[in-house]
Image 1 (cartoon, rainbow, N blue to C red):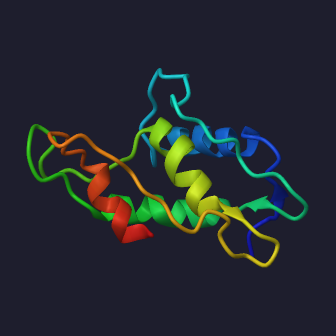
Image 2: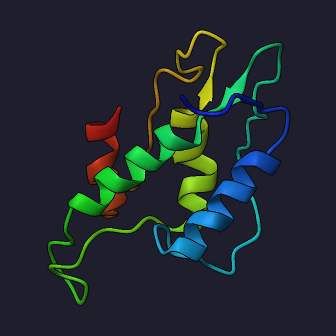
Amino acid sequence: MPTKERACSTDLIDRAVDRWVDEGLVVGTDWAGRPLLHTPLPDGPGIWFDEPAVERVLQFFLLLKQLIGRWAGREFRLLDWQVRWLIAPVFGLKHPDGRRIIRTGSRSLARTAKAPSARGWPCTC
């Protein structure tokens, strides 16, 4: 059973992402900003961050392969900012009873954008 630490700030997510970068599960970048449209993380009694749930999603992404370009055939590793701002909040923030707080997610991409991470997103929700 995962440890139920309160998710009152982004500290828990930041520490987890840094650890996953060190372990090679996530690719580290130098970007330290935040998205233009930023929604504060929910905070309330009993809300907690489930690291193993996010790790399962990251392991799933590793099963996917890059299809084209110079990375073709290699496993797909998410970037640290993708995990910090998209994956971890959606799959890691839980109600006291274990249900996900964010139960529906969506991403918008430009018509010409063919981001590989967009291919794995629907499979994990």
